[in-house]
Each structure stands twice: as structure tokens, then as C-alpha cells.
Image (cartoon, rainbow, N blue to C red):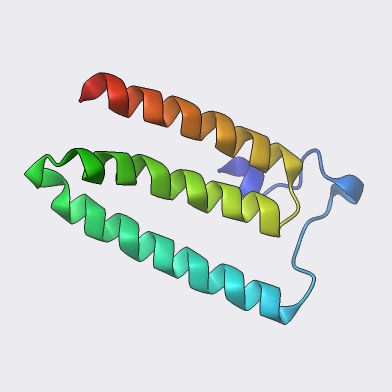
Length: 94
């Protein structure tokens, strides 16, 4: 999550949006993904396997989306590593 704030390993130590439309897409998708995550979190008590995998998928997609839109290669790589291990942990615990 630090990589979403600090422009480490980016060209010119900067990252950002190319346009206002890109920023609005990012805001909309972030709000949507956080709403989905909150919904899944509430449904977690049912113990459904798809809910647990959804709880692993949504943060991975959110971090990956931030890495792609902010043009932050280190964030893209770490989000993929995070996603792989998050899925492995969910698989082990089910």
C-alpha cells in the first residue's frame, strides 16, 4: 500500500493520471471494488467458498488497477505477488 502513495521505482519519481477522465474511471472503479468487498465481507459469515475467493480477488484487482492507472510498475508486480499468495492462503484455509 505504500507503493500507492510513494512514487518509488517510477520514471522521474512521478506517477499520476493522464486526464481527468482517467481519474474519474479510477475513482468509480475504486468505489465499486470497495463496495463489492464490503458486501462480501458481510456475507463472509455464510462460509461460502466463492465469498472467500472474492475477498482475495477484490483487493488484488484494486492494487493492480492502481498500478496500471498510476503507471507504477513496482505496484503492478507486488499486486500480482500479493494476489498469488492471497489465493494460496485462502486455498489452504478452506
